Amino acid sequence: MSSQTTDRRQNASATATGVIDEEKTRDQAGALKEDRETLVKLFHQMLLIRRFEEKCAESYSLGKIGGFCHLYIGQEAVAVGAISALRPDDYVITSYREHGQALAKGISADAIMAELYGKATGCSHGKGGSMHLFDREVNFMGGHAIVGGQIPLATGVAFAAKYRETDQVTACFFGEAAVNQGAFHESLNMAQLWKLPCIYICENNMYGMGTSLERAMSFQDVAQKSCAYEVASEFVDGMDVLKMRHATQRAVKRAREQSLPTLIEARTYRYMGHSMSDPGNYRTRAEIEKYQERDPVKTFARTLIDAGVMTDADIADFEAQIKEEVEHAVRFADESPEPETSELFTNIYANPID
Image (cartoon, rainbow, N blue to C red; front, side, top):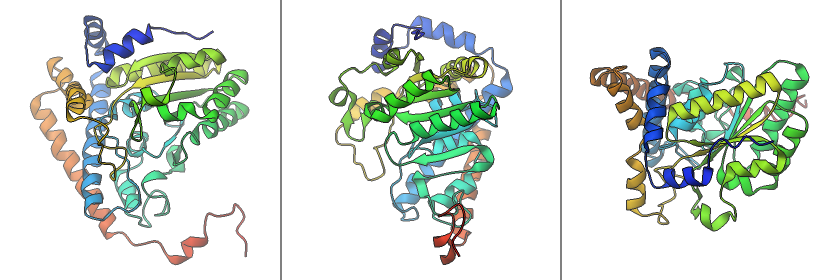
């Protein structure tokens, strides 16, 4: 049966109002038993994603990036925490808001920025752009533009891993709007029925484009929807990178040892619009500022400083290193060549037609 580990309705209310209770504080203090190397790496990845996305916004405004561009600012803790619990050979598949997951999975900032610029050196050879990053080398199985379209694909990847007996786990990221799609329900049913090692991670930022969760979903506790399929589930504070890491570790253990799926609802918040073309008129400035008080990057930095893991000087050093890494990615993208016109006819069929 579903392992509902918390009273999600109460937790969702607390998270939504930005309340940090004593239990959370105790949990966080205990969580810092992670080794320093792990903690520093988590922070580095979150800060890299934040600064990379800020540079993407700047490049988009300059006309360097074409098409749609969906930024991950505010949600960094979800991708970093979850992917840190995976092995390098595990699979990740996600939606169109995937720059953060791609960086966390190991695709270089150079290759991602070049892809956003539509250059031949991009991770998808300039053919995918912002919404369709892909890298077979790190088992990053792409961003997908169709809402919920990646969920059955993830289920198939998990089936393949089980069939080959590799003990690899598949992590699938999607927004809460995808939960209303039939593919979500079909996939959870199939994953439990066939006992597939898949972790379904719902990044619930409470808005599907410009429509609030309350206006689109009759029953809003996403994690509890797993009950219909007897899938284990957990509600997690998606603004806390360590809580995300530990929840995913539990799901990974279940997947590897029992070949069972898990649904994780990560309650989070995006600080930018749905895409760069979205003015965000459906939210108030006060609402955004309320969630910025729980900024996952700034909160984790303060936690590490308070725990003596890092100093202000350490963080300043990281800022300088990451600034150079991101600036290098921009230079690399700028200087990279456009794809050859012959690329229009490659990667269309598995067996090319002469």
